Image (cartoon, rainbow, N blue to C red; front, side):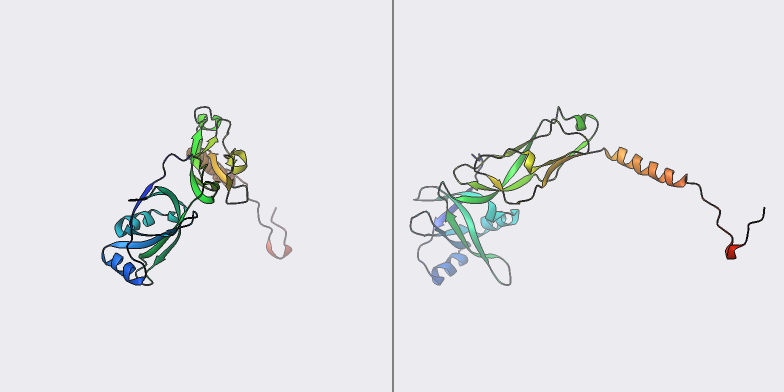
Length: 221
């Protein structure tokens, strides 16, 4: 289970309709709604500055939140829509969906690396590149993994580790169908540069051939 689910604090919005929403915006709040979960929708307000900060961090719609509303039990939610001002592109309304334990959702899960001390490619001076530090997975709300662990203990220089090499948590699967690369061990940059220089020297050492004389004339002996 994911250990760090960020809290999202909100207030109950009194009143409904456009008038209440406009008043919320004048008060520095963004109106919203929490729906689903076999209970009535809950109108809420979220502080504008806090919401804008979270939106600017990215992947807001792929983040699971623990919503805290005074007078209500905490509930896990995920954003389903953010309406924005047509000119200013600032949030004007936000919709959240309550999650059941069996709900399937898309989330970005961090990748943790193990086996670096045993990796033969790194021991030879290779460089580890984490192509995907996060992987987007379809997961069950009740069984969200803290991270995806990859083992590089047997990787040599030039090896790639792909999603098919990883044992995913039960009930999880990648959003992308193809077998994509997660990490790779590359040759040290010094060796790559030396190899390029060797290629240049080899090209310079190729002997040139004397051009045939024009018009089929024989060269002077």
